[in-house]
Image (tube, rainbow, N blue to C red; front, top):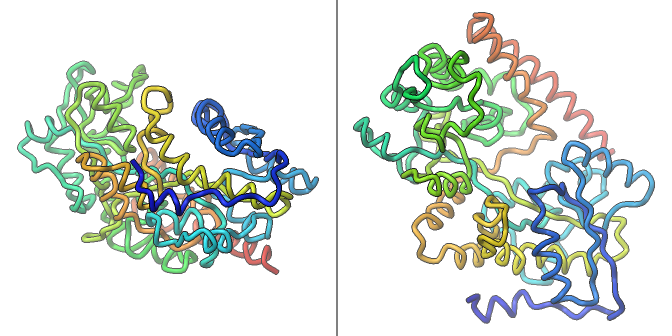
Length: 427
């Protein structure tokens, strides 16, 4: 049960009028957000009968264009899912939430670190987080023990050199797919270490602007070397296409790899498949670097053009508090394992969610290790050249130094252009 004091903190403040208000609410829709219609919106409307929510799900690939069109035509929703929507914040299309948070007793430090990078810009809050998700490493404990390897802990940071040693020890070569076991999946750089701040300096530097120097440190070159060695020694499924061409399953859950990146829901799925697993941090680029996990939060904001900001705040506040608790407790009634296996971002509720459960306590311990990266306008676009670099290294035989130097120059050019566009938004 949530303590009485917390309930009083989150208590609904009476609205100025009791006539029914309709809020337009947009998110990515689909199976991933199905719980909005089946669970959260009905529960919210039951508690707040004078607020009705009209929900529109828009595929993520079309979301930004739909939002830009709506802004241009002055037909924006009241509330929107705001993921990587910093340009809208900068351009003034999203309402700051600091006044609401101060009024209702919330502070940034009341939330886990992911709030800083997914909800704030220049110290101003634009998006209120609900649940949070980890991007860590899942290991097959039985395979580690059979190989005589120590089981990594939540508190440890391993480098890519150590990851390579583990992958070698765990790898079981075979020309028969049925008996083949790979040491690890390939830890794609721009999915993992680059975007999630697993190097010091950050891949774009301390100010989010310097790719040219920060991408060519000795630590990063050592990391590329370890990944290339794993590829050449066929330690990952990516390096044995003749064996994997017809495989459509999950390498980790099917017992074909010993280490994989994944989320807390991936742990639950692996356990349901009968595997003995542990959830730990991913390999880091810089030895000793503590930020060995990535994370994201489902965050919601109020569009500046909304005519119902008070009601919109009540909705997103509820999604981040009572709604986040309800979602995390929904269990089998909710088909979205990822959603109902994740804690609220608000610390008091997350601690309530964890209780004394060892796995959930480890999830929160890993969340504490999230290092919010320096802001950059569009990290995914900035680091895309390194995907091309990897293909040139593995498919064309280009040297690591040459391919990474070229990618770093491209990354710098893209990043400079993104910052020029970004600064224009504020002029």
